[in-house]
Image 1 (cartoon, rainbow, N blue to C red):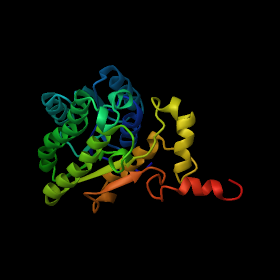
Image 2 (image 1 turned 180 degrees about the vertical axis):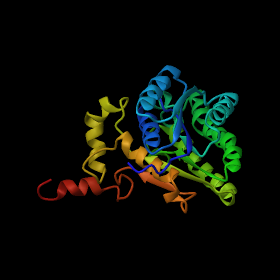
Image 3 (image 1 turned 135 degrees about the vertical axis):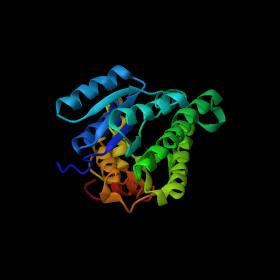
Length: 269
């Protein structure tokens, strides 16, 4: 693999498992020194041990995205350990509440709403806030914020999660606009259905089959698909890309809403 990120220092939040773990591993493979940040410190330390075993540089840190001081400490730890910060992948989000208690607007639990806004949107903003001065000191950097297809379209649920992810898109544009001349780029990724460990059970059932009908690709997404997009946006190959939202969703949002039904009408389908 080409070491596109050799000499770079990266933070990946929510990196103990799923998309974050895949991304942290990919950035390390590309040559970056990676800080694996997660509220699950043992899980982060386990991944770091695997990365170090490959000969790459990595360190684990516990971070609580609901706590500004914890986020500041994460960035300070990174700079102290590796000498600076070039890449921030704001991957972490609260998906537990969105999966169990985040429904329609009429029945929205305001506590759930406030928690998801605090973790997903405010936490992403605070991580950007803490990282920007450190990136400025290095002459620039790349911030990649994880949005979602849920932030680009309406659905029956999850409302609070989707709105928090929509806010991340606007935040991305503001960061890109305010700090572009300082060499700091900021982009967002909007994944489709990504089959992680946590999603594997329902992705293999009727829900996954339904979603696959609406994807244009013959498969659903994997953490590696998102990791590849993050690695590209973090690299100098993407130096002229900022303020953008890139859907990595197998074409889920690229077609008319009746596409799947029309496909069933074609002979042989």
